[in-house]
Length: 564
Image (cartoon, rainbow, N blue to C red; front, side, top):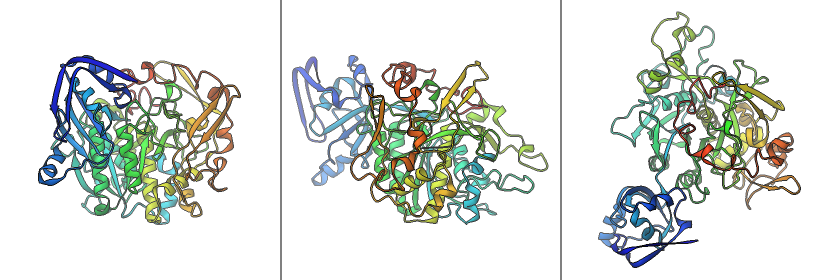
């Protein structure tokens, strides 16, 4: 569709060397402008922060071109980030120039630089991590990039028995100060790689260990003291993680962040950055989101990436056994909005998780009841508070990132696709038919069914994934898309050529997702609960309001969305 924009004559010279002249009217291709950016064009006197993706790398011949390329100035706009990973720039531009910008032949897509936010007692037991530790697989030598609110230098992140930190690289994309004044990233880091050295529970010093308690961490801060960030900051951090891959053996990226989906993953720059990192050989683990109480199709970006491992949230219900574990009612469900990708890929513990505390953080100040008393983790019951409790798919994501680090220590040659395939194929597929959870604040009871869009391929089992040496992904392991025939009431999973699912008995659809997860019930396939209603497919009730985005109820407290 072409949109006519009338106005005065425009004559601007971009430093990329293109002369744009128009008089009386300019045509903009709506398909090259994101849907959330289009309404802002009604105010031509304003400015807007955008990410501009190019169809090919910029050609910069000569000395002058090489000097200008890193600081491209688009139609008088100011570029604040360049992304070689994507052939893109982030810039502040006049809204009156967006149309002219979209008309350049080498511009592929323009989107807003969107805001996003941040989405261990029984946890490690639930996924079988102690069995991995007994075999010596603790993530040793593996670098995990934590793209979050920063990491407080907690003693549980030191090399065991020393004062040497395993946070081997630190960079803030938010301020010049490298810390975690929000507190979310520290909690996530502890689930991945805390060694439990501050806990002194008699007989079990690993009770509060993370899943990969000897992994190295890269602290790439993209969220501020309120847990808020933007696409451009996360993309810059992903790009840095890729550039540091060789220097720090970065094999895993943890993204416990999210925001609404506005377009197909093929056009979304945040999603594209995730996929570029995956293709560079790094396992990218992403939170599904905490919007499951709004229904299906509530996966957040970049969890809609078919390459990434997208993780939903389970509740351990305060026991070591997984037989009574249930899905958290707030865990976001698939299929993804627009692309209909089958997500999440797996689920892992994430509700009421105890991990590392940043004592001076915003979260610690806002939720003092979540700070664990020393009696919880010391035999003396005294000393400073060092642990904190949070909920959410943010926490579940960290569990799977730690699992990937253990697997890569055991077999360094594994590709990201094989890591994903093994985690999905070996995930436990034994679930109850349904479960209920009642919100203690409003008394509302939520009923969850255990279908492919709720629990994916199943409940992560680190021990089983380590033992799964026969599963090798010769092709890609992209999550399949979903096709629904309303006349026949049938759902089919479809994948592109070269994708591993269905190629062998061990990686066939039933072997990976399980027959029970694919059988389909009216709640999934044949009713308004999934297909065809505005309540599901991306209305303001789900995607656009403060009631959902940016509240502490959503982003991981022990109240509200916390299933107690």
